[in-house]
Structures are given as C-alpha cells and as structure tokens.
Amino acid sequence: MFSTHAFTALLALAISPLVARADVTPLTPAPGDSFNAGATCTTTWTGDSNSTMAWKGMAIELMTGANLDMIHLSTVATNQDGTQSGTFSFPCPAVTLNAPIYFFQYSAPGTTVKEWTTRFTIASSSGQTVAAPNATQPGPGGADIPWGAGALQDPSAAVAAPSFAAEGGDGSAAVPAGTSTTSASDAAKSATSSTPSGMVTQLTTSSSTSKSASDSATKTTISVRSGTEERNGVTRVAS
Image (cartoon, rainbow, N blue to C red; front, side, top):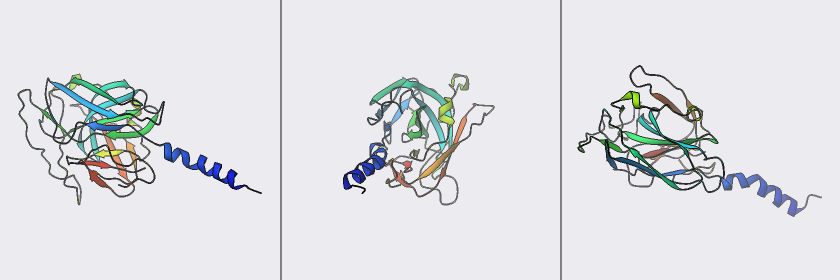
C-alpha cells in the first residue's frame, strides 16, 4: 500500500523547485534617478540566493526603447556573480536624448530569465534633461508609461550583447516600464505570481537581433501570454 509518508515525500519533491525558485532582483536605479554623462552610473541588485550557478556570469546591458520593442545600446558589465548581492559602476556614456528613457537588462548564461530596472535619466554632462518624447507605450490602449528611443553619441563605443541575452526567456521576467513609487524588485517570479504596472502575469519572451546601420542596436521583443501589472513603472511578468 502506498504510505502517507511516501506520498508526502513525493509531494515535497514535486513542489520543491517552485519553492526554491528565485532570480536576481534589480534594486537601482530607482524611479527618478539621473546620472550625468561622464559621471558614474551605478546599478545594484539582490542576488539569487537559492541558486549557486544560474546567475553566475551575469551580464548587464544598457537599454532603451518601448516595453515591447527594447533596444540594446551597449553591454556595460559581464561575468558578474548574480548569486550574490552586488553593485556595478561605470562611466555614463554620452547619449543623444537626455531623458528618462534608459534602463538596465540583467541576463545570465545559466537561465533564460531576464530582469530589468526601472527607467532612469542620462543627463548631459552639465545636468540638462528633457522629458521622454512619448507619454504612453505604443499600440492601442498603451499604458501611461513614458518612453523613448535614445542612442549613444558614439556608436563605435558600443559593446555587443552577449549571445545568451538574445535567447528567449521562460516567462519569469520583468518588463521595464516608466517610473512609479514602488520597488521594481518586488514583482513575483513563480507560477503563483501576480502580474512590469509595473505588471505581473505570465508571458513568454522571444528575442530577435537586428543591426541598424547607425547604432547596431539589438532589439528584444516580449510576447505577453497573460495579464500585466505595473510596479515602479516596471512591467513584470509572472512565470
């Protein structure tokens, strides 16, 4: 006869991957943050403490564009240990549009999940800024999340996206949105997650790389499978 103890053990094995599931959680830049070109740009994260390998070799990319049409500008960090909480700083590049339209994308070779920060501003070297050129996301019923498509003033300084960053995700990622007041880090990442109103629900990601004659940008598209929820101006998707 199948014992109660055996059933309990099998149930624990079945649900343990869901319970243990965690990913890197970007913390900063926070809503409203601004960095001057030529000064120091910084991003921080909480590490994936439940994994010893998935977020090893993490890469961080500077991105721009709409939630469903993200544009890679440059890879700013590689070989970061995403299993530990950390900080990365680098010289802020000069950009063509000094507006709150930039964000960082986190990815790693051991996971198809991608994570994003909220949008932030890269100002001119003297601190001058302008508003985002678009008040709402593109498409019918676009969310009230300002965005725009920036570019590096010197496209030759761009570092290409790592190959694993262009691979499709598994639906546990957060889509960058605008700026709000809650932390971009608290969207759910499991099958029981709620839905970057920020936004949390389940979606799958598919990525395509296109080379622009002007900036060799990499565009990533996200296809949503279920609802969304906005937090910190970050659109998140529950896996």
